Amino acid sequence: MTTTTATGTATGTATGTGTDAAFATALVRMSHVVQYVFADVSREHGVTPQQAQLLCMLNDGPIGMTELSRLLHLEKSSLTGLVDRVERRGLVTRVSHPRDRRACRISLTPEGAGLGEQVHAEICARLDVLGEEMPEADRLRIATALMGVVARYTT
Image 1: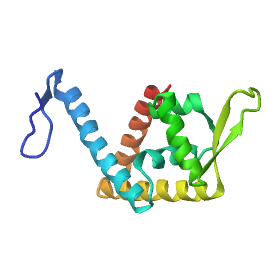
Image 2 (image 1 turned 135 degrees about the vertical axis):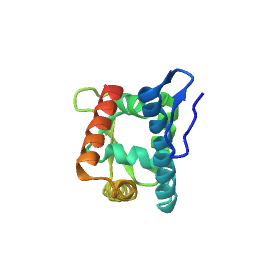
Image 3 (image 1 turned 60 degrees about the vertical axis):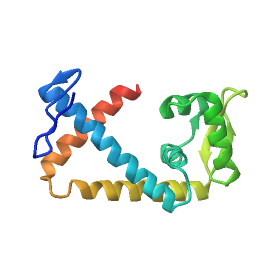
């Protein structure tokens, strides 16, 4: 069970206490904030949060369907439907894989790239405001630690 002190500090969960529980609770609460911001920005741009997430992932270049399925935690049929919907809107295109004709990679169209960059920038700007009162060294330390968590989870 998680309890919260008057200052908002998490002090335990069903699986742990102290620092570990506080860390996990903070991550859960932060994930809610990120989901809210993602949903808000997505809605303002006329896409679903899942479509926005796909566009943001493709900002760095084309990705194969198998890798996208893993990154987005979607079954192949769900991913196919998601890609179909954004493809119909002209935001992505399917490109033949250079070494495997049976496979395709998903690539942003110019319109999709613009929207993906805009959505990503707005989400980052809104989330950045949350920590603007923190010292820069703390923000950097937290960012580095969280990127390490993400890297371990996604590899």
